Figure (tube, each protein chain N blue to C red):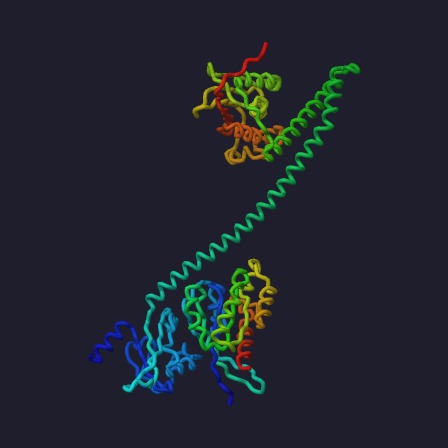
Length: 172
Length: 394
């Protein structure tokens, strides 16, 4: 019988980088161009089967989509409590959205020292507007010793792969 | 207090609660449970983290609350989207539930529906974030515009340098060319027959036009570079206009154009650079002649301007006029109006642009009114000098 486990995963990043859209694409395979700010947290659940060393595991990922605006900075620690992993999301069209990655990672690892990280450089479909080179994201990923993906919630590029990779890290 | 009253208060404040035992199994629910469940009875006996997705991963924290290591567990602005309705916002608090001996017997999980406040907070955050995105986009566009401007300035400098060099190089060989033409036309080295004289006159006129073009090009580059310095002096503007008319007299006579000059009496002197004022009025008169058909009329008038402290020179012609669509561009360098092309009038489209720059440098104005087929009137103003024209020593 397959083992079933639940893990809490937080999505962290500045406002309007596409955290909610990544979750919607992964969980419901949907996308909307309309931008609606997330306040507080919205929890979604998706179960995936991922390989472990000698077996398969049914992993229920509890995806915590956190509001990116700074008014939630004070509450973020309470949202991060109990997280096993996090997706750090930046927007390839806004270079400053990469600047906060180290702070987010630092805060997460302070609250949850064993949490696993993965990076998403989102909106790769907006080819004409990109002002952030994937190599810059890769450099930060190297600093954090975390894998990174260039994603697009709009067209679904690498979204499934991103979350599955994190799933594998969570059951290691 | 009557428990029914307590329930009423909880319903009114949209507060639900669930009490668990020490193993987190729900033993009691109450209040406005509809905000979290369609079937509150199904909660009984089940583990709290199975029922509240926001508590997954918080088992250790709940244990800390039970053990008294953590006073409570709070979660603000938890958003949910129940099927068939919009977003709801909940605030959750988990406290230790104590028995009569004061021992922690379980957890009280309290939930309050704060959707109304949540929607307002969301709208505020949305507006602010959209403004920030707009500000960032504007900042980016400003950067791009600044870069484009810098590039345009660079290209403009290259263009000005090129024009300046080209104009100089054009003028240099023209000087000996015109000199030798004069020698030939003056028959200093031999008699000319009528045909030779006619051909040489054509060459001389072409050389004159080339010199004028080179001078205009140099003026444009000097004006663009801010290198035109005016020597302002009190000037008798009527005398200056008469000089221009005399200079252009042969051109007007050759086209049988009728010229009249009308000047108000006792006009004060203008404060202007004589050479540049001659150039301005000369450009306007040359244009008036070019665009007026043979036998047409040109009227020059000089008077006090409506604007106090200025003299006004007006040149009205009975020419083809300027088409309405060309009028906004008439003072743009190198612009050639359709009427100029149709009438095959010569010129590079620099005269009016130079005139406007020079007039504005004097502190005056230049403008025109035109009706296609009815002719055009150009007006130019010069400031009045506060001193009389200096007398020429005998």
